[in-house]
Image (cartoon, rainbow, N blue to C red):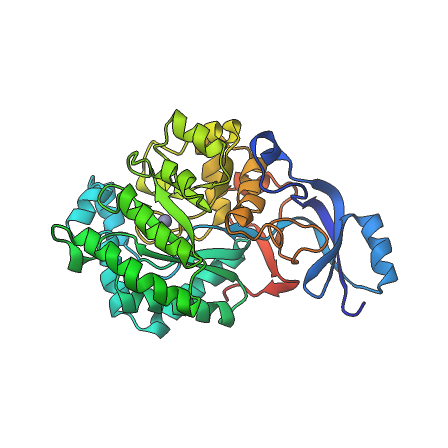
Length: 420
Ligand SMILES: [Zn+2]
């Protein structure tokens, strides 16, 4: 076969081969191969396993060779929850919170998400494309090869669709795979902050936003922020029914700041994922464990907000729920682009093992995006999405917190160029 490429010198090859999604003890089964190799052709993985065995297969195909020099190789990381497109940082609020203001107090004073809404509405397409593109390059530099990205800072028809069109443009302009999600129901926009306004806005989403997004094929998923101060369970249920009818699958932000029963709604509507889950109770955990819904934990939020409470990762995993990890990259509560950093916080604060954390942001994250048959593990037939780490053991990826050891990210058999 023409143009086959053999990657050797994988001191540890973490394949994540096996069933997907991973639940319970299976989340620790990462398919580790010592001294492994990967054979790639046409953007796909042809063979993988111990180096001598793969070398024999490569010899028959006269593959070009590349020695990775004794590094750790994992599947390309999958960031299944980000707010990638935003206009500016909110570093001033960060300082206010450190001085004692709460997230909700800042939001009531006109800061928070609404300040990001004002900034996005005022920003040009090109300005937003430049900053979001730079973020994607930095994510790839930290090993991420697939990113879910939400709208939600537009909150009107033109700006929500503009954000999704920008994601489509970015998907063509650079190599990180983007999975678009409509999050028009992020918070109630300023124009609808009057009695009954939230329901009027939900009505607009159902009658106007969703049909337009579906018609142009601008999003795969529809997300709702189910939280006090955002949207209620009945409002979310109404949006999801309309989204489903148009082919957009539900995702939820739920149980972040208080318990609102969003997790139970996720089970009821068979959502692709329910994200945050800091305030779930025992019955919620049992319901999630018996469902097919991915539980995406976002420990970067509690870390950045300086909160003591984290999602009960151990209980969710031990009960058998499908646990994934993501950055929740956003300017208000989790301004990070690094999944290794999210893994570090997950390990030290939520007691996930390094193996569980890695599975949570590869194969299980891919499952939450409906892509586990194509990405999330290094197996024959799958896309050649890889991350190469300049460490000797996969556990060092979360262990060295705040230090990036990713050397290269590979998407479809090609190296993604990082920021200069
Ligand atoms: Zn979020």
